[in-house]
Amino acid sequence: MGKIAVVTGVSRGIGVGIVRQLAEDGAKVYMISLTEEKLNLSKSEFDECGYDTVACPCDITDRAAVKATIDKVIADSGKIDILVNCAGLMPYPASLLDTTDQWWDDMVEVNLTGTYNVTKAVLPYMLEKKYGRIVNISSVSARKVVGMFVGYAAAKGALHAYTSALANEVMKDGITVNCVLPGFTESDSMHRIWGTIAEQAGITEDEILAPFWAQVPLGRWITPDEIGYTVAFLCSDKAATVTGQIIKVDGGYDNHD
Image (cartoon, rainbow, N blue to C red; front, side):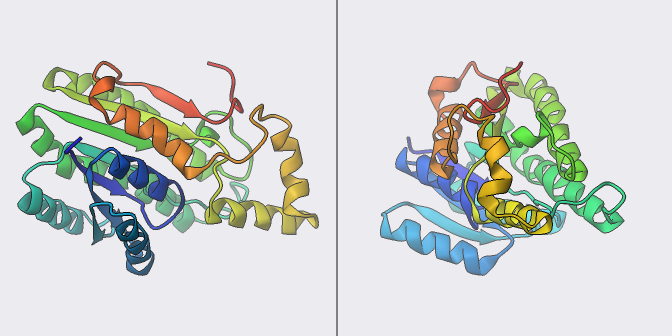
């Protein structure tokens, strides 16, 4: 493949699955995450697999830090072919009235504005080369929503319009922009959230999830690597005509258009 990729949110879960698949396809991956300790742990695991990855600790809500990080990538590699905006903030469940103003601001700042910050820093280099693949990671929760996650659903849902608008803007320059909506993907964050809901309800996590599994034809957790397979395809030359798409990878959970 020989591509240069930047992936945000690589400390755990879906981000790790995405990096693994891009690296399997031969990309050199610059991994951005706020948590340096977890980022370095991921890099150590990738090093053992022989993948070409670079750890780049960075707060995507800090525009100056984002620009400095992307400048370092360009100085090192000379180009950026792929950008995957995977970094996101998942809240503890709370009703709208129990959602603090700070939580709301954080949801928007990380899940939406962070994507804007990184994309704006990367896009000039893609425009210069007349080539690029951008994939934004949203959530099926922005389409088939449940209560107690208003801020998260709103911020992730905004990524859909953002994706469509940007795709129309840059397709003429050889750049595709798509959005992937993971369903119930197993991660520490998902277990934390559903474990909290179960605790509040006085039942087990398996019991709280049972009604949801009944709505998922796949009948099991999706793995981070399975999200990575779809992202890797969208980042490949084979997907040159796929742009502006909102693609669900949810095991059939949200089975309406």
